[in-house]
Image (tube, rainbow, N blue to C red; front, side):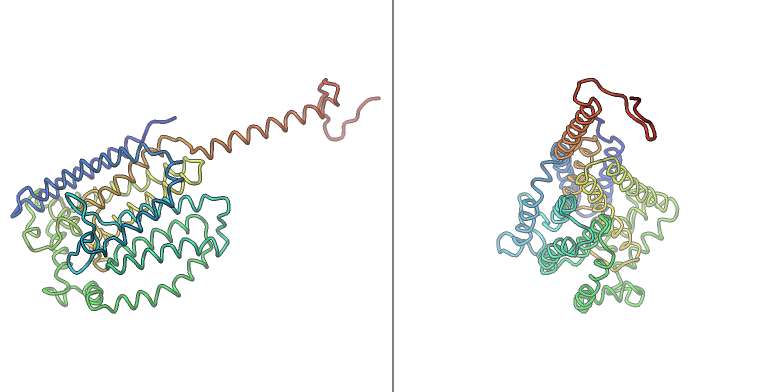
Length: 398
């Protein structure tokens, strides 16, 4: 048995430390240590969650995949209940948990990954079957309906991309995936026609047309990234964080990294996330257990997709969405879920197989031993004396 992957833990630690540093840089002016202290408290809990997830055996995760999915859906519904759900900015995405809040849509993505890994590793799962394809898609649609009701378009898109990607990697028929566009296009058009979403799309296409209105956030992000140049203006010296760039400590923290550390610093962050993705896929490829392999792939995709979308939003490649940068942005829900994902990957990196694989190996060895005994008896002719094997064309001398 191997030890856990220390490089994976090291890179995660570097991203978390960078996140704490950037939270302090973005929020120290005007609010003092308020956000920084809360973020440090979340980091402490996050490492505890990572340790707990590291201790969970893959067989336990597989057995409890469906209960976890149901639990995450219950939390998703609780956001709509008065006294439990918390409303902010016209959206109800959080539930009140002392001493802070929690966003259930983050847990939904982790629960969906574990469920899909279990579902796609079942013997009855058939990639060529429309029934095998329809079941997870219907489950995803139910969750998306609840998420869009909040509303949280970014989380709904992330869940869809994650689900479709895992199904694609399982070998599902491409025509099944293509059929989703028939249902997705009308829904996307209807959602895009909402006034505030329509403004986001038009401002994304050309933010300079309304630089003081709908395009303000993206224009300020461009200014921050452009001001950083090659090496940046220096840690703590950002100007855009001084009430120019909204959400500088959450959704647009990558822009402040680009301003303070420049192109070199932003590139290092990109490389660290790329390393996490490659390391996760490498861990998956080493496993003989289909559940563990799909789980490692799904966890890697979950972290990487969110980071990729955050990078794309900050650089104006996609419309603005409220998705934090994993391990770096301020936001306890995202940090806790991603730390749990890292804990599971660290456990998988040890190379242990699930009980199912161990049982299958034992059964296979017994079958081989039985076949060997039967073959030896046949060769001995029932006399107990093993006769030499006859090669094709040979004859027995009489």
